Length: 222
Image (cartoon, rainbow, N blue to C red):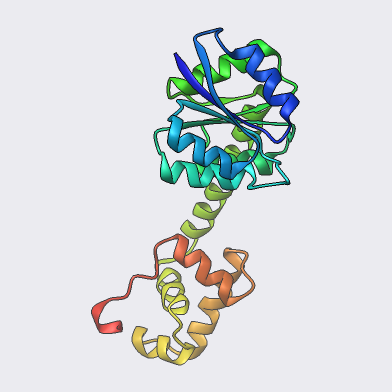
């Protein structure tokens, strides 16, 4: 049996879900909570397999905060977010805090049951349009990373050296002395680097260098 804890601030919603699910589909509703703190306390006592968690609960701890604490306290518990928010920001945050699934309140009953059964088995569940959103975000990030890699590879070996020294905070004169080149040459390399990488400020340059692992100091630099 799947031991289910329902957390929602609306009593009607909780009772309706309990009536729909309890004793059916191998699901036992072991408890109901009206806000996050109550859900944490009941989960610690009842040890459910799945927690059906609402996000917006204005009269207590919200679902996202409660989910974060629950995953630290009971890492084995599977949290299924049940919400009216069809918003990618909530979706990504729910995944970040460790929720196993995300489903909308207007989903058909059969879909809800399938989502509960899926997360109970340790699987992930996202409603169909959320899957498309997640894949789109992944592809966009991959595209940005590819652009960054291409830009970095367009740098000459000397430009990569200068980039590393600049990111570590060295002045143009110090870089010139260390690389045995003129200050004007350093300045020219710096200008080329900023243009090729589409960067405008030193903080942007430092961030880029950090992402590329260029901020490792040698012993003689420390």
